[in-house]
Every structure is written in C-alpha cells, then in structure tokens.
Length: 214
Image (cartoon, rainbow, N blue to C red; front, side, top):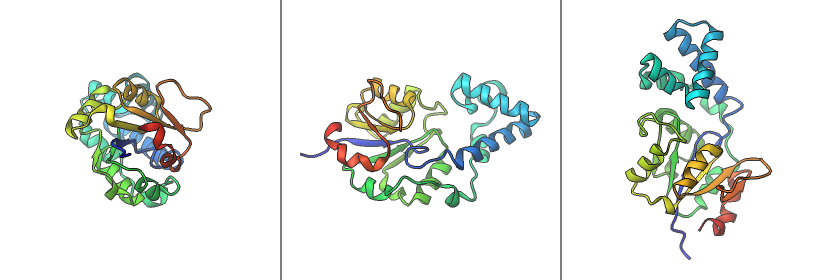
C-alpha cells in the first residue's frame, strides 16, 4: 500500500535539541538586542522579553506592536550562530530515519529562514526537504496561529488531511489537529492529549509507526 502523506517537521527540539546550547545563545542575543535598541539595562530587557513571550507567544510580536522594530533586522541579529556546528545536538540517526519515511517532507519553523537553512545544512539533511517554511513566510504570525499552517498548505498545494505534523509543542499540535492534520508529539511525557495521534520519544521511532499514520 502506498503512503500518500506529506511530513511537516518542526525544526528546533524536533530535528535537533536546541535546549542545551542554541536556545540560551538566542535568548542572550534577544536580551542584548533589546538593551541596544530600546535603551534598557540587562534585567529590564530580559523581563520585557519574557513579558512579550508570555503575552504574544513571541518576543518579536511585542517588539513589532509596541516599538515598530523591523522584524527582519531583529531576526537577523538574534540568530547569528558562528559556532553552530559545535552547538548542535542532532537526533540520533536523523538522516537515516528521514530517508526511511515515504512521501514529501517539509520544515515548518518559527525561526528565520537563514537560521533554519543553516541548521539543516549543519545536520546534513537539507537535501531531504522540499520546502523550508519559516516565520517570514507566515508574515510574522508564528505557530500556533492557524494562519501559517493554512499559508503553508496553500503555498505547497497540500490538503491538511494528507499531512502529518511532527512537533515538540502541544500548542502547535492542537492547531494542526484542529485543521485536520495527523499529529506526532516528540516528548518524554507519560501521557498525550486526545488531539495527538502518535507520541514518540525520538524520531527514530517514526518508521515503525507508519501504520498508525495512514
């Protein structure tokens, strides 16, 4: 039986583990950006960044709404990682796992395009993806906003019911499930909510679970 679905992968904490090195680096860069461009000390900048994250789901949205910050300028300067190769923690057997999954594959990330492509290149899997759909393509409306999901599907001529979203974020999977996508949660949590179709601890488990995702 052919497998006629399209795989849509989140990037950070799904295709690689960003928690140990990359996220702390980006968080520091965002705090420094607010210090430099809003004239704040470190503590005030860090608190404002967290406030916008809690209120809007992304620091960038708060900066755009309240400070007229150019999103391209912000994303470029906060996602510079010259030591990226040494900071990456890839999923085990990532390339082999992706090659075993039948169907088209796309990346859908709230990160900027230059960073996303650099990470995929460093992971050695860039050639396995048909599209890299990033925050610029969603007009700076990040997941879990449904706008980005629908725009991704329109751009790539996808039917949501034929897609599988692989993510570490439950908020993003909730939107995906509501739109009709199959959902895979990458987590070590013991239980999953009803809108999660499959729960895995690492991507290497995916090829064994194809029957549950048809």
